[in-house]
Length: 391
Image (cartoon, rainbow, N blue to C red; front, side, top):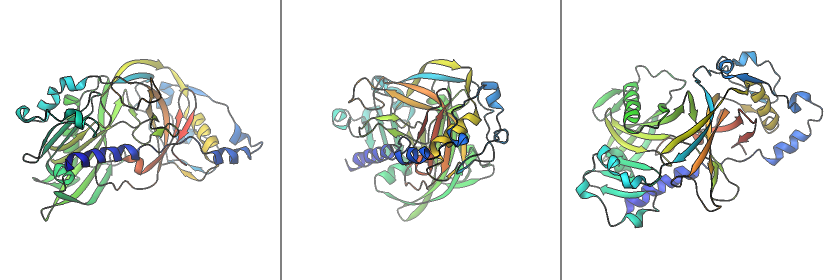
C-alpha cells in the first residue's frame, strides 16, 4: 500500500504543479491604463498572414518598438504544415481493453490484482499489477491513462533507491546531442540512439492518429541504490499535429474551482538502459482528434508581439526565450463538478503563439515538468486573446 500511495501522491503533485496559470493580473491592467495616448502601446491594429507567409516569418522583419520586452534572436516556423482548430476527446472504457497494456509491458496475467480495483480507482490510477518481486507496476484508467513502472524507477518510488542529482539536462529543440553519452546499466550509451528508440516505440505502441511524437527534453539522473550509484535517462515527449506541438509549458486553473481552463499534454519516460524502459506515463489520459477545421489566415507574428506587448510589458521586464507555435487544449465541461480528463470529455485545441520565458529550475526528483522552469504567454492566432501564468 505504501508504494501505491506514493506513486499516486507523485502523480497528484505533478498535476498540482501544472495548475498555476492566471489571467493578466489586475495591477498590469491598472498600469497600462496610465499609458495614455501612447499609440505604440495602445494600438489594436492587427494584420494577418497566410500559413505559407507565417512559415517564413523572421523577427528581424518585425520592426517595432517594444516596452520592457526582450525577444529572442529569431523564430523558426518552417515546420508548420497547416493550422486548424481541433476537436478532441479522451478515451472511453479503456479498462475493458486493458489487455493491450498488459501485453505491451510484459505483465503476468495470472498475477493481476482483481479484488482492489474499486479501492484503487481514486488513488492515481486503477492498479492492476504491483509486484516487488519482479519490480513492476501497472495502472490504467477508463480515459486511457496508463502508468507503468519497473526497474530503478520502481526502486525509487518504493524507497529502495534514493534520488541523487540531475547530472545533465538537454533541450533537444535547441541543442545538438550528437556524441553525448550517459552511463547506464549496460555501460555508456548514446543518448540520441535511446531518444530515437523511444520515439519509434511511442509511434508503434502508443499511436495517436494524425499526430507524431518528438522528444524535446532529456535529463541524466543519478540514484543511489544499495550503496551503489546508478544512472537513468528521463525523457519528455511532445505530441505534434501537422508540425505544431500541444502545449507542454503551462496550465490554467478555473478560478477557485478544482477545474482547469487548459492543461499541458505530453508523455513521460525513463530508461535504465538503451532498451530498458522503467517508466511510462501519458499524464492525463489518451486523446483522439475527432475533427479539425483548417485555418487559412492567422494573426501575423508582428501583431501577436504587439498584443503581447500591450497586455504584459507594463508588469515587469519580459525576457522571451522562445516563441513557438502550438495548440492549447481547452476542456468542455458538462457540469460544474466535472473534472478534467474524464472519460469521453471533449476539448477544443486552439492555435497560439507561445511566448516562453526561461525562469526557475526544474529540479524535481521524478519526471520532467517544464512548467517549473518556464513562464508562458499565449496569444491566440485567431482571436488575439492573451493568457499567461505570470502573476
